[in-house]
Length: 130
Image 1 (cartoon, rainbow, N blue to C red):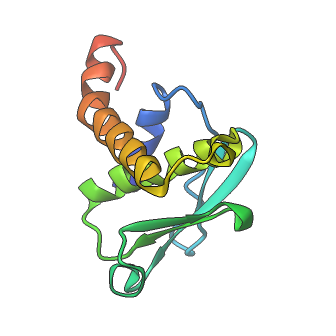
Image 2: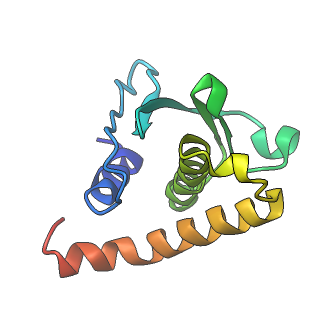
Image 3: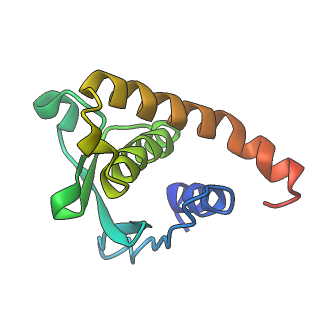
């Protein structure tokens, strides 16, 4: 297992979405996938995402596609995936139809991702899981 897929698998034991996660066969370059409320999302790494898009990750919900900047350190990959998953939750639950501002959505995504990443190891200890 890759460090990223191990981290995500462990995180999903505690994340309320309980998505199906498949790391794909990364030796062949198959994409990782998550499932958020029935929407299967492919996760792929992309060169120069920070340079071209100005972000560490980006979600295209209508295409069921998430991209991560290839240059992200492993610690930032998990945070970025969770951040983009919150965007997916907002999309799948229809919250994006309620005139939520882009700024408010970004604040919500960033803060949820930070809170989850800061606490998921602690939750594993409390719940006596790896």
